[in-house]
Amino acid sequence: MLKAHVNEFIDYCKVVGFSPRSRGSLAITLREFVAFVGGQPIEAPGEVSYGLLSSFVADYLEPSVHKKKARVWCLHQFFHFLTVTGVVRENPATGLPYPKIEKTVPFFLTAVEYNRVIEYFSDGADSPVGFRNLVMVLVLGLLGVRTSTLIALNIEDIDTEAGLALVWEKGDRRRHMVLPELLTEVLGVYLERLDADSGPLFPSKRSKRISQRTMQVIFQAAASDLGLGRPLHARLFRHTAATLLNQAAGTTVTQAVLGHERRANTLRYTHLNPDKYGCYMQRHPYMRRAEA
Image (cartoon, rainbow, N blue to C red):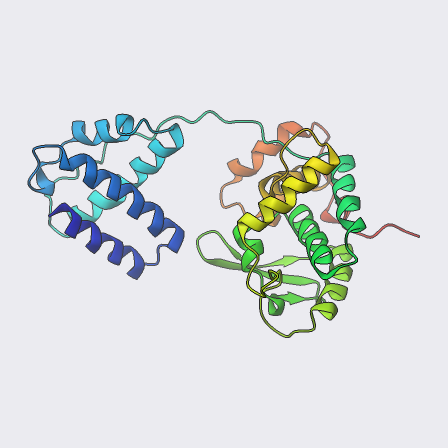
């Protein structure tokens, strides 16, 4: 019986606009919950207690703190749905607290390290794939976009004349981003070489969208060759963009560029930059190309 309600809930999430990623996360968590409840003397959703939910969140399959947080969010959503639809009278998940997650200092590349990465990819930019990789690293490190945003970029999303990029953000939001002059020029050359009016901005060898796994392989090879002493991944470039931009332009501009809805997410980078803020985005280290 519980499984039928789960299917109804996932259908409801699709109708009200939950992103595919959120629906996938909810479905996985609820499958685990159904398996957990299957070992309990429960015949109807109304018999699920707060204690049972707490036990699932904290103990089932020895979850990490991030997994616990995802479970609490899922149960809040699911039992709210069951309450609204009249399946249960009271929501047993209402009082479930989110676990406290320790805030960590984000790792990032210094300007010197990022320059080394750019030089590395520049050396291999003679081939179409190599040039694609260079542009990819520039977009990640200068704009600080998420991996999913980068992969979703299309050729038609780039306007080199206006210096703008139209990007998909978390929660299926679309917004325009200002392109630094250096990046605009490189993208102009890149688009000419692609010689297409539409399609993925970063295609794979089979002309599909580049995959996250392919990006991981590219970055792992670069990190090994450069001897950085740390993993190189798309998230690291986002932290790098945030840190360098925060040094030059401050928290407000950084929040706008990264697309953070909550200012607290941007404030993670402030303690990394003790300098006083008060400049504009034009002072980003890579906002303008170097003078000859």
